Every structure is written in C-alpha cells, then in structure tokens.
Length: 227
Image (cartoon, rainbow, N blue to C red; front, side, top):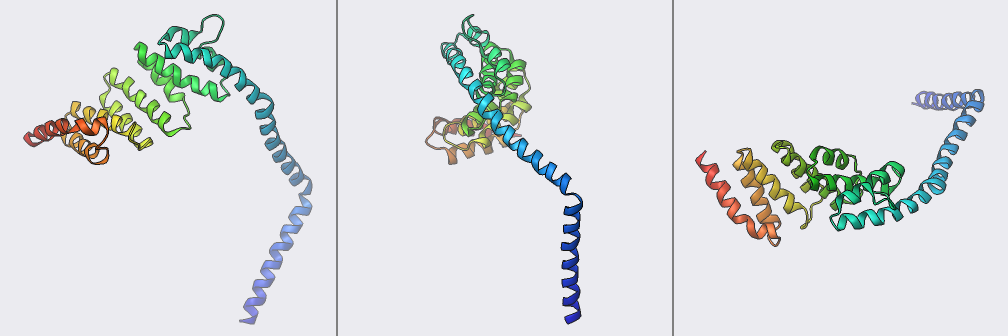
C-alpha cells in the first residue's frame, strides 16, 4: 500500500516536473499566445466601442424614417429610401454589423411578404437573427406564410410549428398553432390537426383562437373518423 502511494506521489511529481520543463522550453511561444489572446479580446471591445457603437447611432437615425414609412405601408419608400434617408436595403448594406442592420433583414422580409415577393421574403427573414422570443416567433411564422403562398404547405406547416414552439405565450403561440393545424388539414392529416386544435382548446382557452377552435375541432374529428 505504501509503495502504491509512493508511486502515485512520484507520478504526480513527474507530471509537474515535465510541465515546468515544457513551460521553460516554450516560454516565448506561450507568451506570444497569451499576448495574442489579450490583443484579440481588447481588439474586439475596441472594435465594438469605437466602430460598431457609433455606426449604430447613425443607423438608428436612418431606421427611424424607414420604420415610419413601413408603418404607413409605404413599402417601396421603406425598402429603397426617399432620397434623403436610406431605406432598409441600404441600411442593411451600410450598417450590416450593427443591430439595426440585422433588424433591417426583418423589415425587408415583411415588406417583401406584403408585396408578394415570397422568395425574397424568405431570404431576408432567414438572415434575421432575433434576440427576442416573440419577434423570433413572428419572423419564423412569416417564413411559414411565404412558403404557404408559394404552395409549399408541408414546409409552411413545419415553420408554423417552430414559430409556436419558439415563444410559448398567449399572443403568438395559438396563432401559429392554428395555422399549423389548418396546414395539416390541407395535407389531409386531420388527426394531427385535431390534436393541435385540442391543444389550443386546453392550453389557450381565453385567446381568440381558443374561443373559436371548437368548430375547427368538430370538423377535423368528423372527417378523421370517416377515413
């Protein structure tokens, strides 16, 4: 037993000895590596503070006008600008590294969806990196809407289910669950649709969808039972 403990102590001592030797032999390389890491971290914070943050201030001043056009449903002006202020396309191009540049992807996707340019809508909405659960859910659901308009019901339904899962709340979840259920009905999968309608009925009873879901559930069950 004593010999085993001695061997263990010797092993540990040997490891430390080899480690010290390695550090001594590679001290210059290790110093350079540590210095590089410090420079990278410092460079990142410097880049954000001195470059990205000032750009974001500029981007927000441009976004304000584009967002106003968006709210007024002046979609072409929102997308392309009015000659004095940039539209979402140029904001994305000039301020892509900023949060506003990222948000421009979302606005462009919704603009193109409203205009019936569904493939462009999918492209920009897919590029949007949402930090907020509800906004993420709406963006995902909008991709589903675009695919539905393109006649790709199965893909659209999948996006609706994802949108419902991304933000489990009384605002967006029942909306996208309802769309998913209708998508399954369109595919002829009434049992799956019925299951989702039941989920809406039990989980979101006080929402608009929850109050109206009974008639959809009755229809889906009736058709499912005849198949």
